[in-house]
Image (cartoon, rainbow, N blue to C red; front, side, top):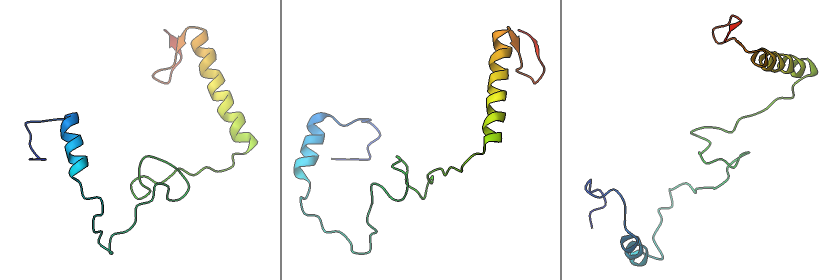
Length: 93
């Protein structure tokens, strides 16, 4: 069976079943191979930590939260009034 064939995109259920049944139940694993961990570190993400590390968060002060709230509220108010700020200037939509 040619696994790298470009002619077939997907495996059929029969092919997958035959591959699973013909697999070695006790394969020999090289001792130099690093173990794979489902969760390594903080997050339980789908990508490994070496590719995209888990984001870290910092404690935000009250001033930062107020500033973000004012900015969000101003955008909501501008849109509620039927205005547009797409290019940085308030204009009639």
